[in-house]
Length: 578
Image (tube, rainbow, N blue to C red; front, top):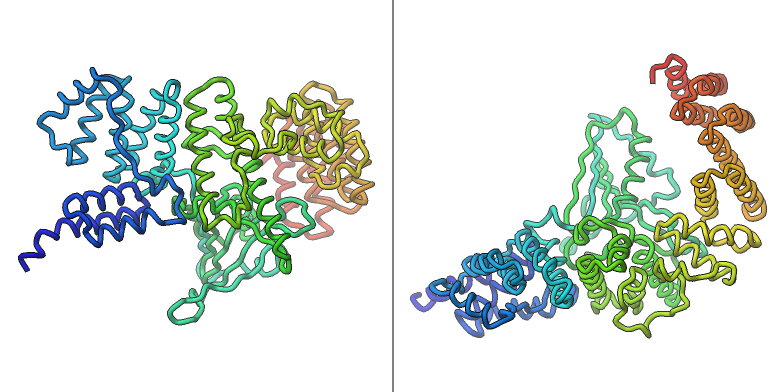
């Protein structure tokens, strides 16, 4: 037994490494195993562990890279470092972290010392502290050493998903759990919805039997965009158990849509609602990209095309609009705008965030899903310099940045490219830019609008008209919207556009004309909820007398139908008890 004693601390380090990896701290795991090998070179367990980590193809490269200290930038600083290190055991990572922190605190321009402090803290598994140190390093490096700064923030992007930094994570799995009142289960409505489909329970690999035998599983889908109806977005996954309903997903916006619908369907029958959010595993940081479902029976070529389309739409339309802590709370679009204005820190952080996404796309395990998507499209979209300009089509409006779109002449574009430019501008969120393309597009043959969300297009134009106080122009766009709807949609949205017309009248201070439009809308067929919504719109605008007229009309229409909810709410408006 005496021969085994020296290996005890080594095996403890190996075990410590696996614990770090379990808690999503691969940088700390690497450090533990390297320390074990310094004590016993070629130690089998540590060697095996490092081999597993380095070859973990499901992890982004930055999570399994070898990080090293930066040397001092000058001889003068080397002298300061030597003096600081004298008498300290730098093999102790906590001691080394303290020494580098002291150097950087004394000289804030010593960016190498601050970077090394961050590395030490990362090796210790103190991820939140490491991110704070790396943030200071990035801010000091960004202008003069952008490559080193990008490396530092790329590491921070990995650290923020690890244990101890949960509040700093950007990629999360969101869970909402409804608990029903005792003896009740109002979730039966799921079985009658066309956008909710049951899925099979997972199979226990040991017993071969379904897991969660008491549970029923569902997927709640939504059409993402028009593509022959072959592609759907997954809003969330539902687990229905006796007494509860658990909803989970990676997109908080889509999850809130489910929450609102479930809440509406189960009014008065909910005992409690609990919300949770946990960091996604590093291997699944891009899980939101794959929250899609395809129609059955598609051939491989069609599936590959839709996969690539999903990647483009996710990153270039959705992802760019979501705030990230790694970008100081900004969206990628906002960070890109600052970068184009000369903000070096914003540029470095955005480049690092994109680099990690690119590494996710380069993994062998996801190659067939990404279909060779060049992340230079995303860089271009955000105003960053591409690494390979040949990888992108300079004429492809879908991946253009805002300044590039501003240089286009809408009148000179054909219908297809104009539609692309409009959708591209809409995703960037600048109403004036979007309206510039939408106004030309709306004036063309209605068939040029077939593949677009026409409500969104005309809403943009109407809002833009109202922003410049042109009511006449707004009404003209409503007329055009209805004309297009008759041609392409059989007039099915005419009522929606008339409702908008009434809302415009309310907004511009013409409540009497608004009531006239509303009165016609609610009569044939009888529409008590619309009459009630109209009353609410008028009340919100301060037109209580006109609102009472519509509240009373809501009651008159609801009574023959027995719609007690509308009647009760309308009476509360008439009594002034809102």
